[in-house]
Length: 136
Image 1 (cartoon, rainbow, N blue to C red):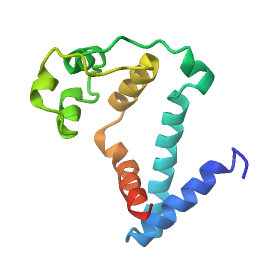
Image 2: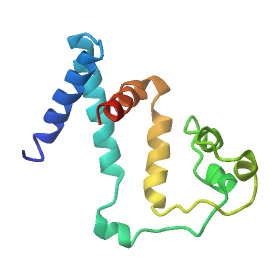
Image 3: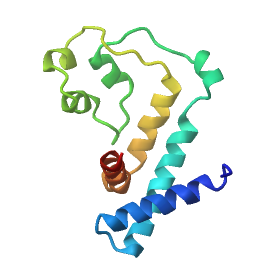
Image 4: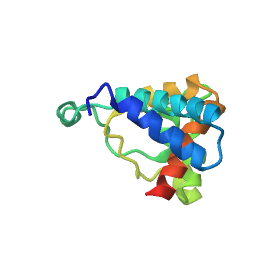
C-alpha cells in the first residue's frame, strides 16, 4: 500500500466501522472524511525522528506554566484537561514541575489547530478513537 493510498484505506476502514456501529453509509462516509482530515493535520504537526532529537524542548514545567504558555484563545483548557486525566487539583494549581514538553513547536501548532475549530469538528475523530479502542 503506497503512502497515497493510506488515507483512502483509513477512510474505508473508518466508514465501515462507523456503519457497523449504526451510522448510515452517507453519514459514515462524511465522518470518515473528517477523521482523515484530522489525522492528516496531526501527522503534519509531528517532527520526524531525526528532527525530534534536535527539537526545542523545555525544562520541566508546572501545569500552571503549561496552561499559561500553551493557551490559545478558544483552544484547549489545559487545567481542565489535566483534571480530567485524574491529576490532583493541588498539582494542577501548584508550582511543582511535573510536565516535560519535548516538542514546543508541536504543542503550539496543536493549540492553534484546536482553537481554529469548534468542538463539534472533533466529534467524528473522537468517536473513531473510541471505536478503534473497542475493536482493538
